[in-house]
Image 1: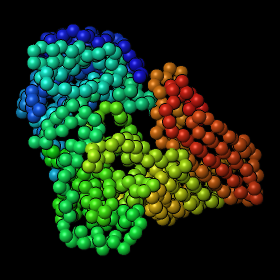
Image 2: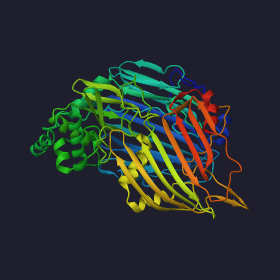
Image 3: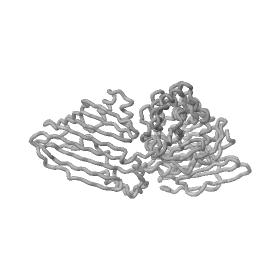
Image 4: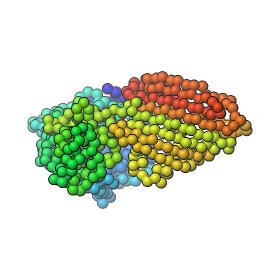
Length: 620
């Protein structure tokens, strides 16, 4: 476990700190260690979570944050979400100057109460309480206190004193008070020692304290925040929410609760059942049946977010989706589950945390670590994965949105922790074949055929399936590092197999591509694909490297040169092998044509911090 800073842990009881007096938040009192790399400093963070019963909990939060400069203004924002499962009972706030003197307090009429419904949502009950003092005389301090009540024990708060980079922590406290009969688990990261635990009659109190945590600068390819700073996650053993009871003692029990939520929601209307049999009864191959029904889902439904109370976890039933022709990830996955069930094919409703690169997960800590639902279809000798919110992804392909991470598959026996497919260096392929001719005035005319496969085609897939041809052309006009150029023509052919691919054809004219100096022409043979910016060497690297995307790029370029020229200088061939990948590059002149070849294999994996400068050399 990484411990980049020393965390002080106090095991004795401490009181909940009251109102600050003038001077408490004076900037002069901040330890100079906390000012380095910091845009803001948490002067005092207090959170006290009270568990009153299985259906009532209360959270008190107090945060005093000193904003040091313009980069820290975002930390001065106050916002608190609420919905059917939680309500905001009280809010107070104060603004202090650099000397720690109170300048003004928050008036209730200044608190904005806004809808927090997303653009893709049809129905949500999320709202947000928001405020900002909009003060710009640096440094300054804001202090907010809020009380929130929950009507369930399904969701317990996390303790995250340092939730962003360039944010230092002076003191942060977290307390859980609960009846002696209530039990929960916790998972600590970068916390030295154990919490203070006190039993007093029929109550138990757990206390954590952290102080003097310098600001973090997120290094390139650094691990997720729990690996580099202090945080504690909590999970109830037993819970209740809107009349449903369950347990998180194990992944199996959490899955059993979810299976209970879904019971009876797989009933299809008679006409849909009939259609399932019309489509699949004559098909003997189970995989083909899945593909046919997935196509039916995509052509007859669309994704709309629906989040209402327990509906954030419980799907609308299959009849609802069939009637309305829309649903959220839960409802669409349940509908697909129901279609497959009618065709006598077993599938598993599967919880997952989605997002590009969002792979942080605690496998030995059963808890709510999910924000999305997909479908897992176990077949003899194989498993198919279905992203039911997409109307364009091929059956069996998950994309970078949900691949290579843990997921919880749910069936009648409960929950089972599994891994989604990994798309690696052989699957994530980009192959470019460029033929170009260079004119005497430096104009380059390019004909390129580009092949993208696996995650390398994800962005392009979204582009060509979501935008008009004019907007795609506009995107292409800003994509390449070619100075002034014109896209004369472009075309795409999609291969929608389980590992999808896209073939792209481009016709481009580049003005002033070559630099003309006297009788010399200077030309970069790597026409289209340019590596990202170089990495800066760092002998003081703190954190390990987490590289989560492996790929292969191959590029062949043939440039016909104007007649009468011969090479004066040609780069030497290069071949590099490293634990981070392989790189080969060659340039030669043949029959008045400049021929360039480049191949890169870039590996994923976990590497120690000491290897960082080797990565720098590889990229260079």
